[in-house]
Image (cartoon, rainbow over all chains, first blue to last red; front, side):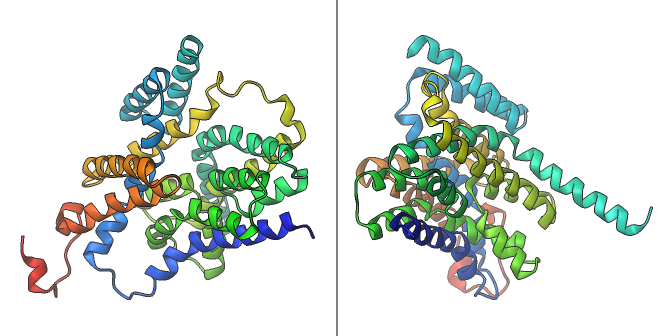
Length: 98
Length: 250
């Protein structure tokens, strides 16, 4: 087997450890402290925000317009409609700014 | 109709309900999957290598980083470490999502954690707010993305040269739009806005001064720290009875 194959296997194991590791650590505790629970409740907003924020800063008017429209649609509609609205605005706005 | 038939029908209903929720995920991640396949072959991977990486690592951003390093002839351990660093945020997902999966048999949990991506985590948290998360629903949402991800990787590897101008089509910015949608999905949670604000500022600062991919973990930890430091009732958590006196102070 090639080096690429073994590197991929090692990377896959390392990745699986990140996906199962948090649960294995937390499940060792019999009772979850309220502050830990408060922290866990904050995970979705905290982590997902970091996947957006730096991209917003490095973007231009077309991307900002797409995000603003998508955010407004998200207040009313579901995930699919907000996503399609944002993508549509992005594609149209890019025709003028790229 | 027998009870068994009813159960089977509601199970397949749950599977397809999960799969339908994943439709935006498939649209948003599909182009990246193909792009990964194309770049991988460009960097000397065989079609099988690219397919195999998508099927086993199954994490878009980390695969892109991995492929980039392969192209630069970096030491193998450094490639693995970099992929680990990019995927480190999953530790937080894993710790938080365990509450919703703990009632399943261990093998089902083990399979579920393998498929725990960013959108899968977000969808599962939303589902958990509404009631119990079923294994069938989870697999409906997760497997539809997984299968499309590995098939599109192979297609991208085969037909990489045919991929059109990705910038004009806006493909490079689809994921931030999608992730914004996931952030918005949790806006009803206590402390949502303060957490988002703190994580946003912290991740931008970390991006500038520490560098990628650490801005993800550092930015997230800042937002989580805010929720931990504030008294738990701000987060909608009922304090346990036998707290120490220190913690009862305002």
